[in-house]
Every structure is written in structure tokens, then in C-alpha cells.
Length: 113
Length: 115
Image (cartoon, each protein chain N blue to C red):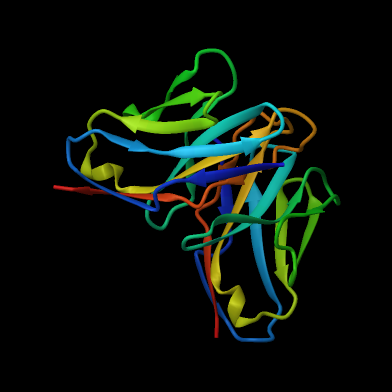
């Protein structure tokens, strides 16, 4: 079974802080994804990575950056947190083929005060 | 580019009744289609997927979906629901070629099963 682990289930930070969300997978998957989930909006892709040190912007990258130094780890960084970044953040992984499903972590519920 | 529309944001249903959650997609290329389920305070789990072949796809927990190319739909069905099926359901699509496994998700449908 694929295991995708997000470092925190709940996180509370203050406006202006630099925030790191970590995601680790144990199945040697090439692709990794960061989404945010908001009521009524479904999942929106922030960034994804298809290889170590490679990254591509998703649909809503503004205010975020990512880092993938090792294949198993994909970090999402909020450079200067703002209240409109309060959300559920989900990490996912998949093998490198378009017919492969994505496997999700349990999510991090982030509150910015 | 692809897009997905889930036609109902909430579907209330009584236990043991049948249910259909509707999903329509738009794409200029051939697609793969997925349904995921999200239980409270958890990530998404794959319910079923359509890749090719038979248009009727069976998944876990008694769910099935039918791919209809002419109507660009991929509706999810279950003949008899249980309380434990209460969750949010997401339809997702990806193009068959020229992409890196990116999925486009619908807005989600909350299934509320009542006793």
C-alpha cells in the first residue's frame, strides 16, 4: 500500500510567518502534487513535481513555492502567510503515467490568524 | 484542456435507497476518468477509474460508474447506500496523452445518508 504522510494534521500560524508543509511518500513515485481544498471549490492544484528538483506551477501558485530535493519528499512553502491561505492542504503522489491514480495524504488543516 | 462539473453539491438520501451522483466533463482529447471519496478528516481514496474497455466500471464498496462518451458523462451509482457512505465524492479527469498525470477535479458532491 502506498503511504503518503503529511507532517501535521493541524497547524496554526500568524500572518506574515513563513510556513512549511511537508509531504513524504514511500512508494518511489515520480509525481507529487500539492492541492488546497476549500468548500464549494473542490481541489485546486498549487504546484506539482515530476522529478527531483523539477517543479511546475498549477492553477493557483501565487503566494506559494515548493521544494523537491529528494524523490520522496515534497515541501510546500508559504513565503509570508496571509489569512486567505487558511485552508485544507492535500499532498498526492502518482506514478509517471497519465492513467495512474493519485494517492493522497490525510491533509493539513492550516489556520492563519 | 479539461474541465469537470459535478451537477449536485449535496445529495440527501435515505439508507438502503439507490443513489446517483452526476459528473459531466469537457475535453478536446480522449480522457481517463476517476471517482474519489473523502471521509471526514481524511484524504481522498480512489473509488474507481475508467481507462478503456467496458464502459461500466465497478469499484470498491459496491459503487459503479458508467462512461458515456456521447454525453461526456461519468455518473456514479450505488443500488443501496449505507450510513457509512456519507462522505464527499469527487469526479476527476485527465487527458490520455501529453500530460504528467495532472488531474482536474470537480467541485465535489456531499452524499448525506439518513437513517
